[in-house]
Amino acid sequence: MTDNLARASKKSPLAVRKRGAFACREAHCWPIVRAMPKILHIEDDPANRLLVRKLLTPAGFEVTDAADGLEGIRLALQQRPDLVLVDISIPGLDGYEVTLRLRSEPKLRGVPIVAITAEGDRDTSLAVGCDGFLQKPIDARSFADKVRGYLEGRRESTSPDATGQHLRLQSQRIVSHLEEKIAELSAVNQRLLGADQAKKEFYRNISHELATPMTPIVGYLKLLIDGELGDLATPQVKALRAMSDCVQRLRRLIDNLLDVTALETGRMRFAQREYDLAELVRQAITRHDGLNDGRLRLVTDLPKRGTLVSYGDVERLGRAIDQMLDNAAKFTPAGGTVGVRARQLPSGHLELCIADTGAGVPPEKASRLFEPFYQVDGSPTRAFGGTGVGLAVVRGVALGHGGDVRLASPGGEEIVGVPLNGAAFYFVLPMGRRSLSEPPSRPWSEPPSRPA
Image (spheres, rainbow, N blue to C red):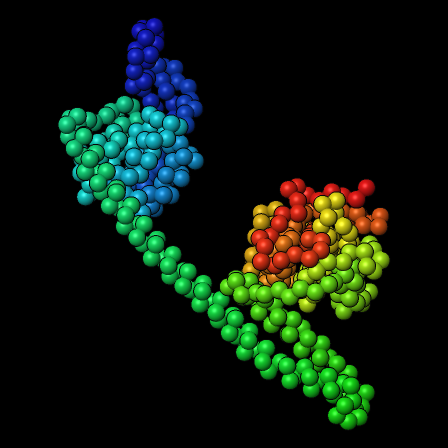
């Protein structure tokens, strides 16, 4: 008798009777260890998703929901379910398009797909690759058994002629749908381009409007501090100097906004005159309060005057160096070190390296660091202030002079024997006179060599 049961069980899994969580042959019972079949249900109606889950979960199925076609495709590729239930009328890609997409995936070959819908067509559903078609409303009493039947191999079919006809009609629908989406995307893209241009013009106009009243404010403050308008008491001079510091910071911010809008609109112009890169760096260090107040350690490797001479826009180069120093000082904790090195590369280019012992830049954010208005931490609770335009201006100035700027994080730099493992920025410029209408050159194809 036992042998007969064993032979029967090989032919059909239903030959083994179930009692609760046990399988039994005659008087012998043992626990069943079996994974629950995974069902992916793609349906935009929450009430229908809940109904299917309530019907299938007690019957021993594990149900995952997707609210639209794109999410359904992502979950199917990620989880490889045992069966997919798909509604035809879903947002984005409809059920027909989802089925065609899933049928193109080798990893989902053999996974049954069943259309469950109130509006779809049975022949079209089968033609695009569905294995079954269930009409809404669902029959709650037989629904779980029908799903189990598809899992055990039940398949529906239609005639080859009907399949070809429905595939042609579906192809036409897909093309029409694609044309509509392309038209929508084109319209949205045009609106975005218009909004972006309006934003640039707004920044340019507001920056100019802010810059205009700044000129007399700066001038009169200087006259007051210098005593040109009469003698002042010591507390008055201290107050005016504090005001002057704030005004200078505001003026730098306005200059940055003017520069970045000029870069984005292609209106930035560069003047050419002789400069000494090492001297520009020394002047920038002198006027940077954050590097002279004792909070940070500064190490420099700058050659003597007249060694790194070239031609360019001295004012804009000075502002770019200010931004790089400001960035290093801002993100280096108290007691940390900022290193500055200027040198000539074997290629003939001039290189300014500014490195620090800060936390560096996360790899996933490094590629966007030189974009206008981008900040590594853009949250309202961020620890560091700023507008996110400084490094964009640095890159624009470098490119405008035929050079470039690059970030290495962690930097792994060493300046005058001091290791600097935070971020390292390399600002590279061409040597000698150059037409600023020429396209920018690329001073390297790989990271600059480290000093021996």
